[in-house]
Length: 280
Image (cartoon, rainbow, N blue to C red; front, side, top):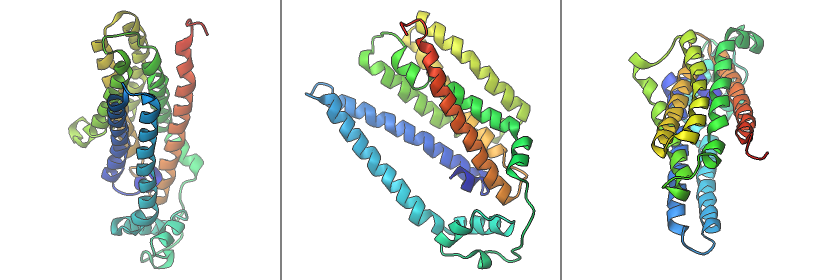
């Protein structure tokens, strides 16, 4: 999807990324509801989990069907895919066919055009790739594992971890809308890199807040983690494709997602470091 939307309007990509965060917020809301509904009942955790995953599966299936049968037939999607094909993209041919449009009739003046290779795109945007990796390496090293297990005991009891995760998801959603305000959208490549590296100060901040702070400080830090994650993700993914042709934007979007996934894997792995000194 990110590869697809990278050669369309930046607003489309921003809306999709906001939708990802909205799904997290809805997931948290659903989890809070199921916990409240089944907290005191027999086998409450099991019943809540079954209901949670049933509803989640229904929504996931709906999204898959919409992408497979509705999205390719939208006029605006056909237009941008046709435009990308006219600029030399070979990867959208099957997508055009799925939408009932053949590449040969997709766009006047269709011809082969030279595009940058994936290696050239990566070398030109290695800082953006590094940005995506570091954003999610940090975020996933804290969220959700550390927030679920290592935040101590507080007055909210069993609700505490759920509240922290919900606050992260809500502020992640808000952060993905902030770049719509053009005056505060960060476009400087150097500025983005500095901001992303400064986020690593959150590691000692969370460590000392866990030991010495109260739940108010932890909620504030978690909210900032979500806000900065959403804001920087949108800034990087909407800025990187600017100035390239459709096929290059498509490829670059996919490359950045690859580094995003690498950051997620690294973050989940680094999350185990919080267990050092806890008997492991």
